[in-house]
Image (cartoon, rainbow, N blue to C red; front, side, top):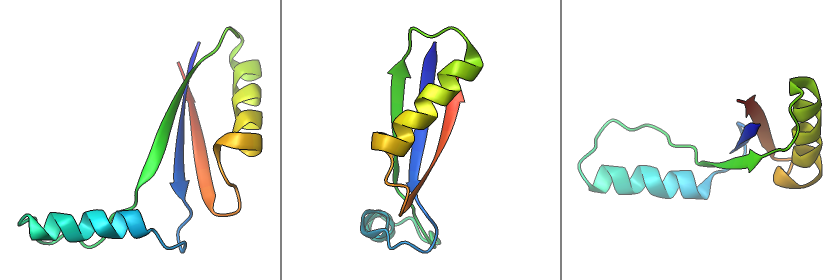
Length: 79
């Protein structure tokens, strides 16, 4: 089973990389971009076939390593 984890900075947390991208887009002529938030996507191949167990395992991975839950939020997709 494949899992895809989306990790983003929580709203209210300064995103300097997103701001740099927003500025660069403006420099390239893409006007009207008012904000950019940058995150990461992590794809994991799991041996687990039970969806509930897979979600529990990936959630534990996120809580322990993949996301800094103080400043980041995450979502998990299984497929």
